[in-house]
Amino acid sequence: MSNNNKNNEHVISYGKYVLVWIALLALTSLTVTVAGVHFGSYSLFVALVIAAAKAFLVVQIFMHIKVEDPVFKIFILVILFTLLAIFGLTSLDFIYR
Image 1 (cartoon, rainbow, N blue to C red):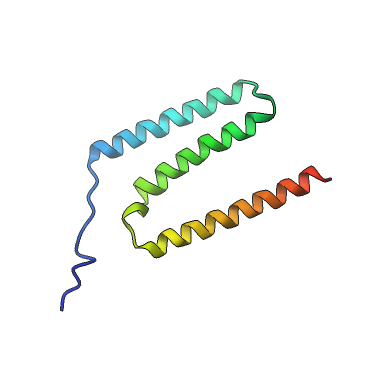
Image 2: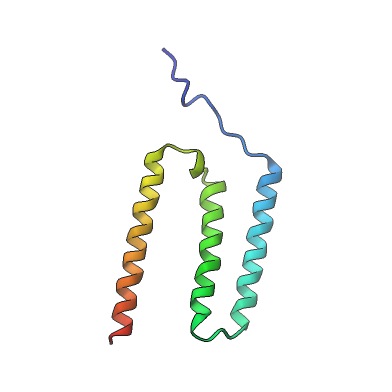
Protein backbone atom coordinates (compact mmCIF):
# COMPACT_ATOMS: atom_id res chain seq x y z
CA MET A 1 0.00 0.00 0.00
CA SER A 2 2.86 2.39 -0.63
CA ASN A 3 2.52 5.45 -2.81
CA ASN A 4 5.27 5.05 -5.41
CA ASN A 5 4.30 8.20 -7.34
CA LYS A 6 5.70 10.54 -4.69
CA ASN A 7 8.76 8.40 -3.94
CA ASN A 8 10.35 9.14 -7.29
CA GLU A 9 12.63 12.05 -6.55
CA HIS A 10 13.58 14.35 -9.38
CA VAL A 11 17.27 15.20 -9.31
CA ILE A 12 18.85 18.00 -11.34
CA SER A 13 22.61 18.06 -11.62
CA TYR A 14 24.67 20.94 -10.28
CA GLY A 15 25.96 21.53 -13.79
CA LYS A 16 22.47 22.33 -15.03
CA TYR A 17 21.92 24.74 -12.15
CA VAL A 18 25.21 26.46 -12.98
CA LEU A 19 24.25 26.73 -16.66
CA VAL A 20 20.88 28.24 -15.77
CA TRP A 21 22.60 30.64 -13.37
CA ILE A 22 25.00 31.72 -16.13
CA ALA A 23 22.06 32.14 -18.52
CA LEU A 24 20.26 34.30 -15.95
CA LEU A 25 23.39 36.41 -15.49
CA ALA A 26 23.71 36.79 -19.26
CA LEU A 27 20.06 37.78 -19.63
CA THR A 28 20.43 40.29 -16.79
CA SER A 29 23.48 41.77 -18.53
CA LEU A 30 21.47 41.91 -21.74
CA THR A 31 18.68 43.73 -19.90
CA VAL A 32 21.14 46.34 -18.62
CA THR A 33 22.64 46.71 -22.10
CA VAL A 34 19.23 47.06 -23.76
CA ALA A 35 18.29 49.75 -21.23
CA GLY A 36 21.04 51.95 -22.66
CA VAL A 37 20.07 51.38 -26.30
CA HIS A 38 17.20 53.35 -27.83
CA PHE A 39 14.73 51.03 -29.58
CA GLY A 40 11.96 53.59 -29.81
CA SER A 41 8.55 52.13 -29.15
CA TYR A 42 10.00 48.60 -28.98
CA SER A 43 12.07 49.19 -25.84
CA LEU A 44 9.37 47.98 -23.49
CA PHE A 45 8.65 44.94 -25.66
CA VAL A 46 12.33 43.91 -25.72
CA ALA A 47 12.62 44.33 -21.95
CA LEU A 48 9.47 42.24 -21.37
CA VAL A 49 10.69 39.46 -23.67
CA ILE A 50 13.97 39.24 -21.76
CA ALA A 51 12.10 39.27 -18.43
CA ALA A 52 9.78 36.52 -19.67
CA ALA A 53 12.77 34.38 -20.67
CA LYS A 54 14.28 34.79 -17.21
CA ALA A 55 10.96 34.00 -15.52
CA PHE A 56 10.57 30.89 -17.70
CA LEU A 57 13.99 29.61 -16.64
CA VAL A 58 13.29 30.20 -12.97
CA VAL A 59 9.87 28.54 -13.08
CA GLN A 60 11.00 25.52 -15.11
CA ILE A 61 14.32 24.78 -13.41
CA PHE A 62 14.35 26.23 -9.89
CA MET A 63 10.66 25.72 -9.13
CA HIS A 64 10.61 22.27 -10.83
CA ILE A 65 7.28 22.94 -12.53
CA LYS A 66 8.12 20.74 -15.50
CA VAL A 67 8.12 17.63 -13.28
CA GLU A 68 5.17 18.57 -11.05
CA ASP A 69 1.58 17.37 -11.28
CA PRO A 70 -0.56 18.80 -14.11
CA VAL A 71 -2.69 20.76 -11.64
CA PHE A 72 0.28 23.06 -10.94
CA LYS A 73 0.71 23.67 -14.66
CA ILE A 74 -2.97 24.60 -14.90
CA PHE A 75 -2.52 27.05 -12.02
CA ILE A 76 0.44 28.63 -13.83
CA LEU A 77 -1.65 29.00 -17.00
CA VAL A 78 -4.50 30.63 -15.06
CA ILE A 79 -2.04 33.03 -13.44
CA LEU A 80 -0.50 33.89 -16.81
CA PHE A 81 -3.93 34.49 -18.36
CA THR A 82 -4.89 36.75 -15.46
CA LEU A 83 -1.62 38.67 -15.75
CA LEU A 84 -2.09 39.12 -19.50
CA ALA A 85 -5.65 40.33 -18.94
CA ILE A 86 -4.44 42.87 -16.38
CA PHE A 87 -1.67 44.07 -18.74
CA GLY A 88 -4.12 44.28 -21.64
CA LEU A 89 -6.74 46.23 -19.72
CA THR A 90 -4.10 48.57 -18.31
CA SER A 91 -2.69 49.14 -21.80
CA LEU A 92 -6.15 49.92 -23.17
CA ASP A 93 -6.71 52.38 -20.34
CA PHE A 94 -3.37 54.04 -21.03
CA ILE A 95 -3.90 54.20 -24.81
CA TYR A 96 -7.42 55.69 -24.69
CA ARG A 97 -6.83 58.38 -22.05
